[in-house]
Image 1: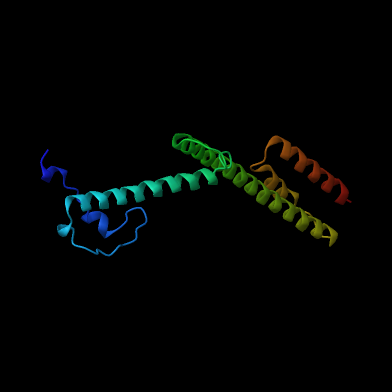
Image 2: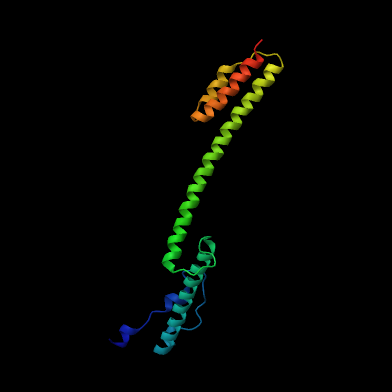
Length: 159
């Protein structure tokens, strides 16, 4: 292998650090470096890159609850991180469904309050719109609960 084949292009590494996005000013012209200086500079840059990757894996390991404080290979860290992210996504979806269900229940309860206030003021109650509200998007258990409430409401306010 000739000397030209062994030359290491370090000019692009001097311009910026691709991992951090920070620019570093070029201090010396690389044309004036000897082969040993180029090699030493390249080794230093490579060591810095490996240290950055190692630190990133350490931070990732500490961020995953099942790995916190434990020793794990990089493959294990990536696998457990993937599992953790998927688990969090499932929890987010379940929580979003709960939020939507609670919003629907709030709407139904607000309609109940409105109907009860109308009945209290002596106004006639329009229960058909209430039935439409409680019958949409409800599971069987919830429908039974709300239909039981509406029956109580009908019987307690009928004269």
